[in-house]
Image (cartoon, rainbow, N blue to C red; front, side, top):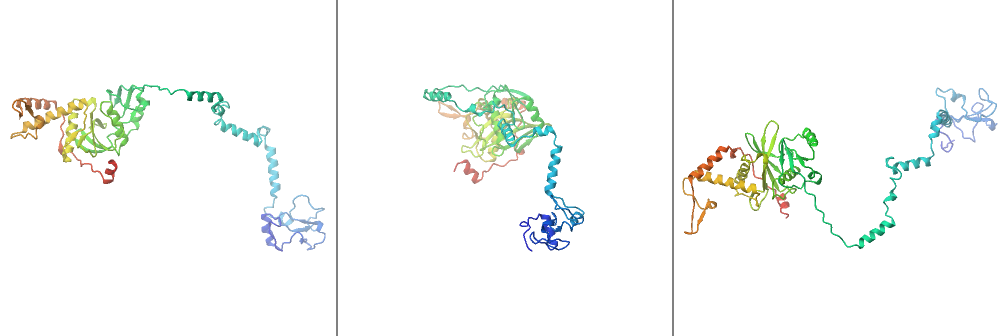
Length: 435
């Protein structure tokens, strides 16, 4: 006899056992002991192996067919006797009902009640809001609101002039110094409403409070500008910083410089510029003194776009040092450099002082004839004779140079420069020119 186990209503265990003997279907079932098919109404079938036995052939014999599950003597004598899954589940349910405490029985809710609780939980954002606060009907405009809105559309437009609040920054905390500011810088609103702005002298990060600054100082590992060191002599070092590679640093530097330069208008578009940072080194790091910036590609051969010496380092010759250094770079590029105009008031004074000293040095060293073309900025025009003449007072030159030497200003040493001119690739150059 061949039949599907599913069609014969056999479970998985019985389906494996019936393959080990000559199985018979329910219509052909005979007693395994007497091999007789008679008295079919007295044949009992094992729930595990599906073998048939007469009630009187069983050992011990049965008076009648059992109402529940029945297992033959062969299956009952197995090391792990079979057990009805249905009966086992029923007993587990009974045990659970017996062990369930009355308190838990009271807490059990219907599915509808649980769904209602879940809806309330999510609606109130985890019970953080009350039902009234979570009611979104309050945000729906009422008829009265709609009428007011329609009336407002009919009213003539009014121009309301609001005066923008000016920056309240009057000082900056820079390193160990508290410096008075001269002009207003466009810092974000949450920063420019404080009297003191705190700036890290190494990474140029600006902060609102001394507490934040102290935390930053413990975490900040920067001790020098983020660029290449192109000049070093004694305690003076100059770093070349690319505005495209170190955008945040250069933007923060320009914002701080605006508080001391009236004509400065560049704050954020720093990518086309190179920044030369002058520092003074000690055991703590490289302290910021000043800087100047220049365009990577200038059509007018400008060698300085912006120049600044911090107020705490002014009147020490650092400004003229930066000017002299900018002309040294122009010489390396084989160009006649000039600063971008207009110059700030202090910048104009610095350049006049620098050129006065530079020209006097050349005149002192001059022993032969002097070309008018080489010194045309020093010519005086005589309206009577309509001729040009150079008025030189050797004593004035000597006194001025002695006065400069007595100040002991630091001088640029061209032999300490390690620098190559910046070269733009063709692709980058076309991007800057928008071609």
